[in-house]
Length: 80
Image 1 (cartoon, rainbow, N blue to C red):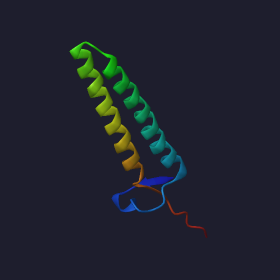
Image 2: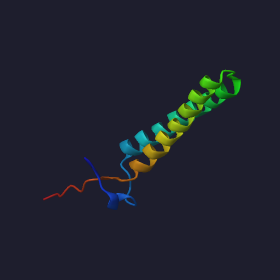
Image 3: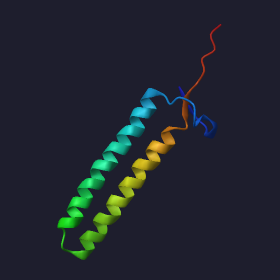
């Protein structure tokens, strides 16, 4: 089981949590690129504003997801 604490930032991140954070960052990056391409090709100012908001918010979500994944650490299992 993984625990979430601020003090765990420099501890090794569990593999499944690291994969989740990397996936969030990759998906947000692809969505940001797609939104930026659509932004360049859009002509309506309202559509451009929405695409810009989507691009920025997706990038922020990816960065925050990757950053928060560093706070997880595998719990120590005490063996008797």
